[in-house]
Length: 193
Image 1 (cartoon, rainbow, N blue to C red):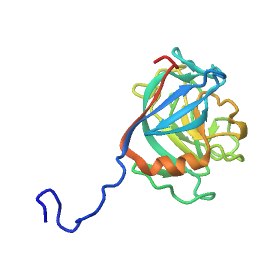
Image 2: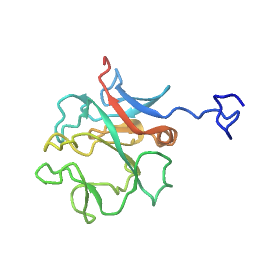
Image 3: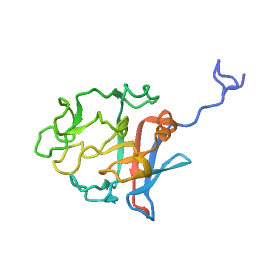
């Protein structure tokens, strides 16, 4: 056995390197669409209706230009199996919501709300939030009115605009989530940066 080989793994090929950084860039044709780069792969994505913006505010429809850590992975256990990922994983509960009320002390945080109460519900009728990756926007510290519920989630057909998130097809999550490092970030940049 060569000195560089470990016992029990002779001839084993190393697996693909874990991804520590993803990148999002806008389309040159439509500012509400873009591309997600994961290693050497490039996938289409939907962005906020306002495109990528620097001065993010609540309700402006912009996707923030920033490098954002991937905080947690949420999934709908009643619709799909637990995804494979090193990210912290949480099954979405019926009462889960995200506080988007800038006047609330829990602004931009996961909260417990009875169904029907107006908040950003994580249990939706459509499949957009069947898989959600919480992006670390405006959370350390939280500044009221600077934007909330910035997620990486599933896209609508035709990649129609989001409210400020990044959205991809379901197959992208199946390919990318197992390859993410525990500490991974997504860089959302203008085309020229």
